[in-house]
Image (cartoon, rainbow, N blue to C red; front, side, top):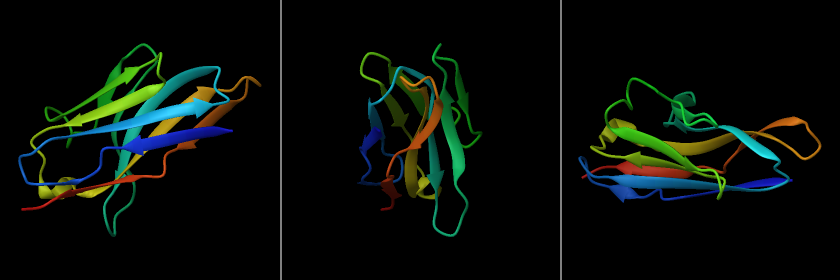
Length: 120
């Protein structure tokens, strides 16, 4: 069993910054891709950013230049630094981790979501 614990969501004013964290624990042999997705009210879940085990990153166009994804492999933790936040960034942000379990099965896990609200 795997747990993903997210933190960092909050209410912030436009132009502000937030840092999201997601720590994975449990039956994990090796963490592969880690990422952040978000879902705004009435919209589908969308990719924000991903980071590979080799730290290659990929960003949605809306996140480029404002958000930075990083990871701490020793802590099995992924971060999302969000700067210059806009009201349209308001959403529930979900952590996603793809990993190899000790049973050598490939598994996808999702966090419970953390709410980011950008408003004045």
